[in-house]
Image 1 (cartoon, rainbow, N blue to C red):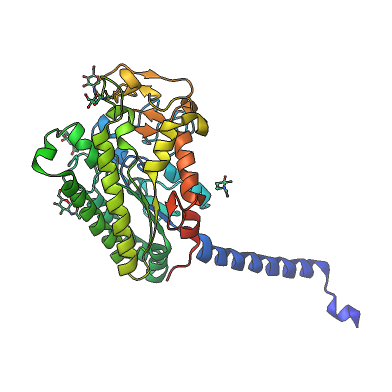
Image 2 (image 1 turned 45 degrees about the vertical axis):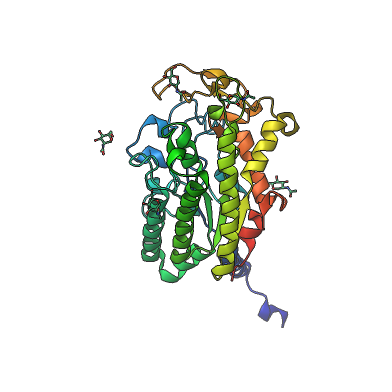
Length: 371
Ligand SMILES: *[C@@H]1O[C@H](CO)[C@@H](O)[C@H](O)[C@H]1NC(C)=O
Ligand SMILES: *[C@@H]1O[C@H](CO)[C@@H](O)[C@H](O)[C@H]1NC(C)=O
Ligand SMILES: *[C@@H]1O[C@H](CO)[C@@H](O)[C@H](O)[C@H]1NC(C)=O
Ligand SMILES: *[C@@H]1O[C@H](CO)[C@@H](O)[C@H](O)[C@H]1NC(C)=O
Ligand SMILES: *[C@@H]1O[C@H](CO)[C@@H](O)[C@H](O)[C@H]1NC(C)=O
């Protein structure tokens, strides 16, 4: 009687294997549909992980030479930092691989997302036109990618990836830096408020464009304390530029108001807004509280505060100095954060409190099933 149900061990092993294998496959399948939320990245040098290596531009818009990348990657990648950027840490926290530049991806190589961000890019089409991939063009590339995905994996699967994906955007700093460098008379012809209004108007158009493609979850990085980055400190006295800080604040107020409006207007639209200004200024004001020793002078560059963007010696000026201990610095070069600062910002975005990432943090944004 017992004999009739006990099989020979080899058969039992095979059946056990099949049962376990199918269990494994089905839970993996569940996990993938539930948890593997793709990450799509847009914007400027805060988010650029190498896009500009693939376009015709100049060293001003590139960081593909040493000492960029020296700390983590041990070689330059195009990231404007000694190591990883905010988006690299966010990908890690979301259990995704490092998200590659869209322009580097080959067909059939979609793995967890795409990065369209281009250093120097702005929301206004004429910001560094011809040297960068502007925000509008980045949206076009998302549209191209969506079509490719539909071809590769079928319409239903592609639409799901687009819909459940998180769209992480950092944009605007390039246009607010323009009046201090290439266009000093800008505010003689337009008020600060109207200029910010143009930038926000263009950002709104692109957010709606991503929504049209199918995107629903938006993570926006506000403008940091722009007037206090080394490159903006006037050489005479080293104080922050009040005018640049005012622009950043005007932008951030307008951006949060438009995000709230879009969430009310557009079915299923959800966002997180990162208060980069406050978290940055905290570290600039009280560096030691966050483990830094230096928050005014950059690690890499030349001149007072190493405010000259000559880091790497490829941007016209060949001379530059480099600190030994970038982890002690808030800024790696004249206008970009060190890896350590980036990690802190990413952690605040991921699971920080609502005073700094609102109305929900990225952990919640990634998890939420959506409408
Ligand atoms: C790249 O830009 C340079 C300078 O603007 C120009 O001379 C060159 O023809 C461009 N090359 C390509 C391939 O577009
Ligand atoms: C953005 O700004 C420029 C002006 O520089 C304008 O020509 C363009 O149509 C605007 N819209 C978008 C979506 O970029
Ligand atoms: C520092 O220099 C700038 C530019 O010349 C000036 O606008 C600002 O008032 C100065 N700040 C102080 C504290 O002296
Ligand atoms: C950097 O220094 C060089 C040489 O002194 C100078 O020609 C250049 O204008 C400086 N650039 C900036 C952004 O200050
Ligand atoms: C927030 O997330 C980071 C990264 O996963 C983790 O190291 C940290 O412990 C988390 N903090 C809290 C309070 O959960």
